Image: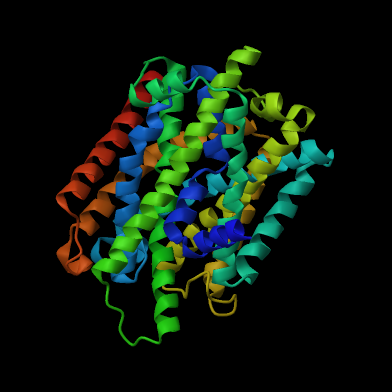
Length: 420
């Protein structure tokens, strides 16, 4: 009983940062990490540690912007930058995020088809309707609470790594000692890894969710004015750090388990979900695909509302609609209609018969190309003392932020040279 009370307490205290970190491990991310492990063994484990400070720096800036200004990123951009910048950032983000929604829905549909022998073209609309009902008709606290519990679906990757008797010493060495290759395969997975780990939809989502948290707290405490204190910012930083750490913790175990399993089967790469599920076979035998599939479905159910919600927030802020997961459909009709439309368009993309593994991996590459201009704007906003009301970036935040910008720009350039 005490154990479950502690688990519930942790769940209640988890904020937008932890939900954001968990949703970062969506089907696109999981397949990219599994493919990295199968193709290169432990050689990409260093990226989990390497990316952590960069993803934290940008997420913390995004969260702080939302919490301090009580506005989403798009609304801040709209108020302080030229319209062409607003439409450019909004346009590329909406297109890329819609593609990711489609990729994650395809993963759910293919897994459900394999488990039930019912066509994915039944499961695609069924999953879309379920996710939309889940997103639109639950109140924000219930919505956030459900997302927190779905994070438990990632636990089986950790158990798998232990049951596979991972070579821990070799894995730890690979984590702290970088390994890079300019082969086409390595550059592809390196770029996809960065894009799916440092994803723009997470920037928009967390900024908006911090405003939701702030508004909920203001309502509960019946405050006329909301003062942003050092204590609250400290909690925000801690929540964001734990969320990013959770994301990379899961990523590390996914790659480690896949790297160890790759030697058992001698597969050069993952070509389908059946091969991806082989990671679990030594532990679960004939139930490997079932547990793997449920994990992918859980990850998709966790990520797709965040993806669609981020589009809803962006367009609502551009066109001055009422917004917020905590509001009802009647109160924020435009916001929810955008979420519905983005989900349905993402679903419709899957009727073009894309290869699910390739689509999931290349969506990460797409993110790497669109992320640099968004990071550039986030850093500029977070340094603006007028906008940030005395809560601007520290020197450490700036160093990490600009390094992230350079890293994403360089990754896109290297990919263009070696893969295109």
